[in-house]
Length: 364
Image 1: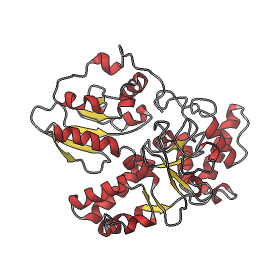
Image 2 (image 1 turned 90 degrees about the vertical axis):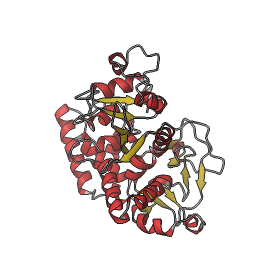
Image 3 (image 1 turned 180 degrees about the vertical axis):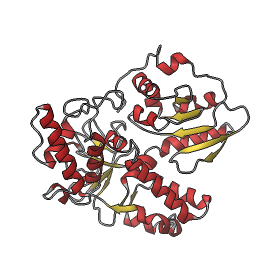
Image 4 (image 1 turned 120 degrees about the vertical axis):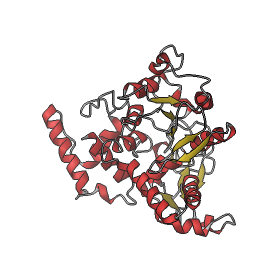
């Protein structure tokens, strides 16, 4: 039920207008509201009276609390489906909606990229188009008149962009995070000005970007287009990490080839490598990430941002969720080349996260 709720929250967050919160509700939203009402009645709890009230529950109630009570082995219990400041779906929400056989937003991102590859006709054109998407989650009307603009690439990717949803604007303005370059909002949905900087009460789709970074203000959203949220979350967000990892592989003279039907996965080439598959992800819920490798015949190396790889709580949750932990290795980019060269081995103590002085605070 929570995965279905997460899917509905994600779909509502992508609506250009806000009509979905008025009666009659979309059928999927009405269905999950009905299920939650029955669930609460079975628990002896007062049920939500409307879809807006249910969304407010998703903002104020961690997923580990009643009535959600998600097992801590699946999702960190202090996570929420809706961000308190941004009032929009969290990354946890997108990752939970992507879990299971249906695949949700992550599957949507993979399908969209697969269709793009078919339109491109060659790997070279596909990689250029994919790079454009990753680097341009926001496209302004004026961008199309720049000398560097490629009409050829735009003709292949323009169908993957949408008008800016009302939920991401304040009085017709749009903010972009100065770090992840994705949409952002000030706390309390204040009207931004040119001097806005990130802080503890701001929200951006990256969720973990540092404070004190100047934000970009787009004063009018007329002619502004946003990349589909699944591609922003599962392609644009981890792209900085992907570029850094591939640059390290190039410097180490390790060959790699893109794995088809994956988002950021590569087959490694070279003599004496202890692993042959490399997957690059930026995910806040490690158990859900581990679920993707339940059928791994390995060995597989999974690279996540350094700030996540160094958190004991994150590593433990990832390892404990694996069906074959000896086949899937987790690392940050800092140790990647040493791992590949066998200069630093994964041992059982490290995989359990013992003996580390790192904080076990929630990385999200």
